[in-house]
Amino acid sequence: MLATAMAGAAAIAVPAAAAEAIVNFPSLDGATDLIGHLTRPEGDAPAAVLMHGCSGLNDKKGRIFGLYRAWARALAVQGYVTLIVDSASPRGLGQTCSRGPDARRMWRDRPKDAYGALGYLQGQPFVKPDRIALMGWSQGGGVALLSINDKSIGRPATLAQDFRVAVSFYPGVCADIYQSRPYTNVEPDSWTTRVPLLVLIGEADVWTPFKPCDAFIAAAKARGNPVELKSYPGAVHAFDAPNLPRTELPQYQMHDGSIPVIGTDPEARKDAFPRVLDYLKQHLE
Image 1 (cartoon, one colour):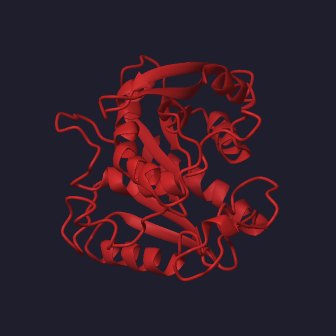
Image 2 (cartoon, one colour):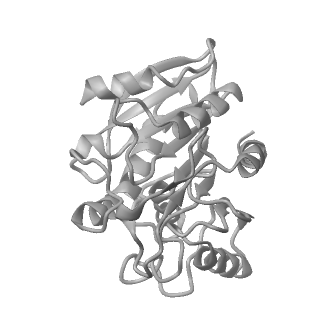
């Protein structure tokens, strides 16, 4: 498992001025020793925790998926410390996109991974402890929503400094029905966060559907939360991945019979990278 993780880390290809390392730190679930892929520039810097989607962190060849490598490079170029968290391999899990106990376990436990990663970074002398972002994709994006609300299922009660900002790409469970009881401690129509949040999603995404997410974020914003949503007409799931052919995934057919589709959307991707980097700069620097 560690050899696989190291092979993936070697593929990030960060700038020469940045150092890479494989690190281990505990999830706050009390049972899991997580694997992290850490990249750091010289000197003290803001940081970002990156949470992968339901396909896991590594492809079949043991390499970190190109999507996460691309964002790690982009963040490193801007001078951020990055910590890509592997939540699947340490639990002996592969994909958790299929409905079942493994998927439910990830939704329940991964917010505790996010805060385990935050605690790890805040303990490092080269990280500015009050300047750490949370970023997630798909399942990881939904984990961000479960993590940053005021009744988080992952945040420790003794936490002194929370994430400064969050970015969520096409998040799973982005709907009030999943962000409230019985799945969380939040009462219906009352999801609240003090952490600024940017959500990016494709309007043609049927895997993590746009309409309920748009309604959820709009309602949260109307209640005064510091949240915003950027949508991309015609874009599907994983629109920001590099060179990903448009592909149907019938093995993950939705309840309504629709078939999830993934694929790069060049225009959406071109907008998302500078938009996210500007948003992080606004809140972290």
